[in-house]
Structure formats: C-alpha cells, structure tokens
Length: 263
Image (cartoon, rainbow, N blue to C red):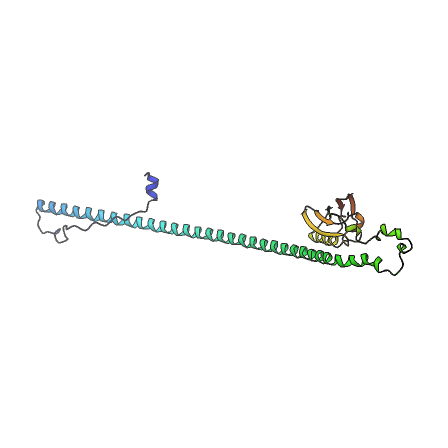
C-alpha cells in the first residue's frame, strides 16, 4: 500500500495513555538548600514536563484526525446524495420512455382496429353481393320461358333441336376466374386519401375485394380482385381524384399519379 492509499484510509484515533504516577506539586517543593536534593527535584520536574508535553501532542493529533474523519463523512454523504439524484433522473427517463412506448403501442392498436373495421365492412358487402347473386340470375333465365309469345319452334318443329341463344346477361362479365389487378397510386399525401381510394375501388361494379399491400413515401399499392379489368375511366367518379393521370393501364396493372394539390 503506497502513501496515497494510506492517506485515503479512514484515520483512527490514537488512544490516550493512562497517566502514570509521577511527582506531585508537593513532592517538588522543599525548604532544603542541599544541591543534591535540589538536583533530584529538578529531574522530577523535567520528567513531569515531558509527560505533559507528550500528552498534549497526543490530544492535538486526535483532534486533527477527528476533523479529517468529519470531512470524510461529509464527502461520503455528498457522494451518496449525488448518486441518488442520478438514479432518480435515470428512473424518470426510463418511465418517460415506457410511457412514450405505451402511447405509440396504443396508437398502433387503434390504427389496426380501424383497418380491421374497414376490411370487415368490405367483407360484409362482398358477402351480401354473393348471397344476392343467385336470386338476381334466376329472373334472367326464367324470363324467356314465361313469355306468352309463341316461339319460332311452334311453326318449325326442327327448331327444337337448336334452341335459341339466351339473351346477354348483365353478369356476363362476372363469368370465369376472378382477376387480380395491381393498382399503384403515386403522390398519395395522406392515409385518408389512401383509404378513400381503397373504399372507392371496393364499391366499383365487378370488384370482389381490395387489399392494401404497401403504403410508404407517397406510393400506395393495392391488390384488387375483380371479374373484369380496371381502367382509368373507372376512377372518374373518385372524389379525391381531381387532376389524376393514368401512367400505365394493362389488364392486370393500373398505375396512376395524383396531383400534388390532391387531398
């Protein structure tokens, strides 16, 4: 252990020595003029003086070390106070981060709930349209049979072997496998505009469903499932589509660009 480490060690008080029996004041006085006796008394006085001097040094040293211990205790108390303040600040910052994360999580959950509600509404509309499809097709197929007008087969029996073709139905465009069309919109400024476009496409005739694939940096990607291709003319009635421009139009891809001033 070096001198610096020794200085940092807590000081200890030196115990005071017990007084030893020595010459008293009465023992140092005499009425004799004998030099030998006076010399003995002088030696005793010197011994007594040395004892008091050493006793005074020990007391002074203990007083000095007591002061050092007091200063060390004050420094330790201040250090503990500073550490407690830093711990409190760290705890407060951690609580603030936890609260911020909780708020962000709640906002994300609310956004997901809104999107789920929108998807559920689209599914309900699709289910209603699918449930209504058989009933809508029956009148179209039964119409020619219920007609009281005589058919050409009554005049020509050979016509029974080649029945006439049924009239075109309003749902001929819904026959066959549904198409999956990618709709890409650039310049979408807000989530409200993206949601408006999704809802508008979902309400178009022949559209089965619309699913959001990506929305980042103003680019919205939607996948539309429909019984027919889409064109730029289908977006003419979109309220938020003022100034839009069709940049690509194919049977399975429809790409549009919105005006910067669009909502």
